[in-house]
Picture 1 (cartoon, rainbow, N blue to C red):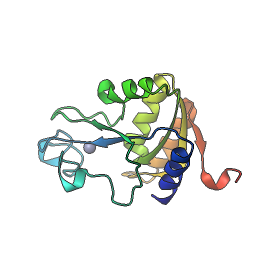
Picture 2 (picture 1 turned 90 degrees about the horizontal axis):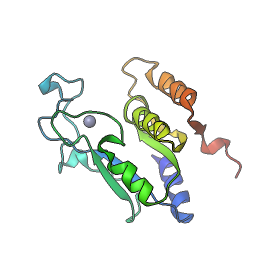
Picture 3 (picture 1 turned 90 degrees about the vertical axis):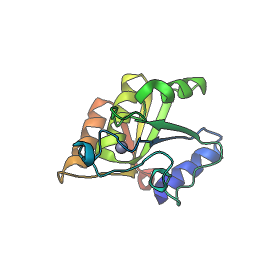
Length: 160
Ligand code: ZN
């Protein structure tokens, strides 16, 4: 989270908009084990578990986009439903910088969709983390995002 907060602060200082996507699931969401899905119940709309992490330094101007809000919809992508795309276009955004959780699921699908929609897409390599259900999932997801055209950066490799 510290690298992600540092990126957010840099963008806020530059007057650039911050968009935050979040899972916002109904209690009977199809991705939950109770319904045969792969995950324990998580991010139930309105619950403590659906809040952004307390240490995440989102500015008040953050545009929040909720996703996978219907029981039978689980896309992982922040672009699900079209709201993020619409908000980005309204703001005149042509390039996105993507960080957060998780490298091998929501980050991966969000980056893929951003590229497919023609956004220049930068992957914040030091501000993502993988679930790694299989030990190599995160590394493979990063390689695939780069292969598809995402540009990986890390703060420790940027000139000061
Ligand atoms: Zn979810």
